[in-house]
Amino acid sequence: SLSDILLVLAKQLKLLIITPLVFGVITAYYVLFMVSPTYVSSAKIMSSGGGSSPSQLQLQGLAAQFGVAVPGGSEGAEWVYPDIIKSRTLARALLIRKFDTNKYGPQKSLLQILTYGDEEPEVNPNTLIKFGIESYLGMIKVEQDRQTQIYTVTVSAFEPQFAADLCAALIEELDTHQRTYKTAKVKETRLFIEGRIIDVQKELEEAEEALKDFVNRNRQIQGSPALLLEQQRLTREATVLTGVFTTLKQQLEMTKIEEVKESALVQVLDPPEAPLYRD
Image 1 (cartoon, rainbow, N blue to C red):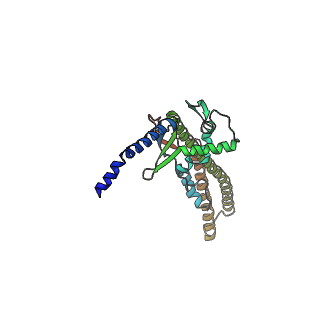
Image 2 (tube, helix red, strand yellow; image 1 turned 120 degrees about the horizontal axis):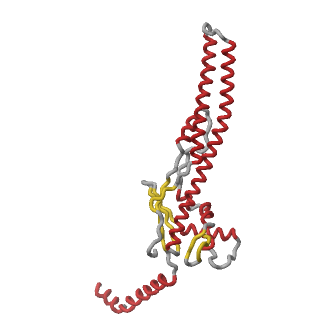
Image 3 (tube, helix red, strand yellow; image 1 turned 135 degrees about the horizontal axis):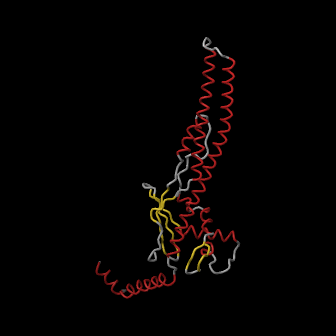
């Protein structure tokens, strides 16, 4: 009955009060004095450069008529930021960057901060880098809003300013990584166009020479349907090649502009800030 249960609880009242109190004191002491404090800094970013440029799309449509695939197409071009941010490639780029911390002093590499600190490393550099990458990946969290395509990047660290600095450095390296990828793709497209221009120019010169020779050999062709048809065919071929050559020249200039254009591929909606309180 309820009275029996209350009687048992009354007999063990001391135990019921002291046990949670002891565990609460131990937990508070552990959190406040033993475990390292963790500070979280976050930023919101979105892509401003996913997909192909207009010049690439126009060139792909033109090249498709000739059965040629243009490098740097739009397939898979949309950036997958969570995978890039959590990649070992980006982690290695961040490990060599230097940061200021109160614990280890100014201008210490992220690898030193996350691994051996003020002591001498006891393992070889390759193993040290692997440990650093694991520590870095444990500090980073990326969440994506599927509707707005906005990414929230969260960095956890032992100091508030260090967390904000690391988050800002991560965004910079992400933008550099995307810029390098885009530059390589645009360069690949430019080299393709330049090679295609050489081939089309040669074909155009041959078509023009063929048309000139035909006109020189056949001064009076009004009475011959076969000769008229042949002249139309040669003229059409020269006209088509002229249009292709002109379009490729235009695309080459657009690609050169795209290659030297400087623009941020990562838009920062909310920059990282140093948190006021521990997490």
